[in-house]
Length: 250
Ligand SMILES: *[C@@H]1O[C@H](CO)[C@@H](O)[C@H](O)[C@H]1NC(C)=O
Ligand SMILES: *[C@@H]1O[C@H](CO)[C@@H](O)[C@H](O)[C@H]1NC(C)=O
Ligand SMILES: *[C@@H]1O[C@H](CO)[C@@H](O)[C@H](O)[C@H]1NC(C)=O
Ligand SMILES: *[C@@H]1O[C@H](CO)[C@@H](O)[C@H](O)[C@H]1NC(C)=O
Image (tube, rainbow, N blue to C red; front, top):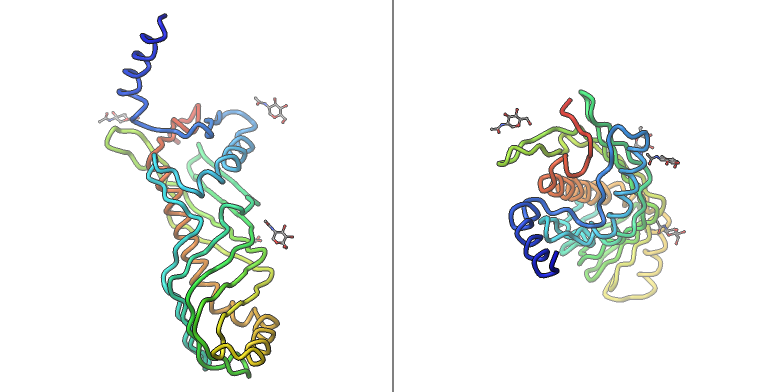
């Protein structure tokens, strides 16, 4: 066939079908009845995670590194701490630590766990005490959270699109997490008084769990929400049959 003609034909073919459902080239469908199915899915996710976390504009999937966070306000136990313009960095460098995709049965489950070193950047404003020590200041903040592991468990439901293609959707996700260590870096604490600032930083970093008890839940909640939303955006744009070969409705 003439190269030009085949190009035109491929072009025509693509106008009618390729545009319908774009699948990034780094994703290869897995065969469902294959014993290696879970392994295949895991490899696919591992291979696509770095791309995926940077966003897939063709699939309307936004970047999740960084994840912009809503304001975080902690107010209680004599401490008022406010983070604004907050963003979480590092999801694209996270490692997949667990993945279970149970499909083709009546109860379809999805479990995903990842672990990484995340850092939160924000403008902070703090006033009050942490435990016994006074703390007061306002400026730029970086919170380094090391070894953050998040596990998301969800049911997979099916939704039909306008073209009668079936898509997965994560519903009623639940999650839990662990954090290995946290270091706080609050610039301009006590108006830049180095001695007071050093003492308070040392104390805060030694007692990081206390602070993270308040800080982590709203931050992780937003990260999980963003992850689930992103996965669902991907699912909404790629029918099951394009991702899983040999799939039959349970
Ligand atoms: C499944 O995995 C095993 C071990 O990794 C490999 O030897 C085998 O070829 C795989 N089977 C298929 C169908 O890919
Ligand atoms: C996180 O940081 C620690 C200490 O710097 C390092 O040992 C570990 O490999 C890092 N983990 C990841 C997933 O990058
Ligand atoms: C949608 O697809 C299902 C099976 O995949 C089929 O039974 C049904 O008739 C289709 N509906 C329409 C409106 O095409
Ligand atoms: C989440 O909870 C399950 C069940 O209790 C546990 O096995 C798992 O280690 C937890 N994961 C994290 C990241 O804390």
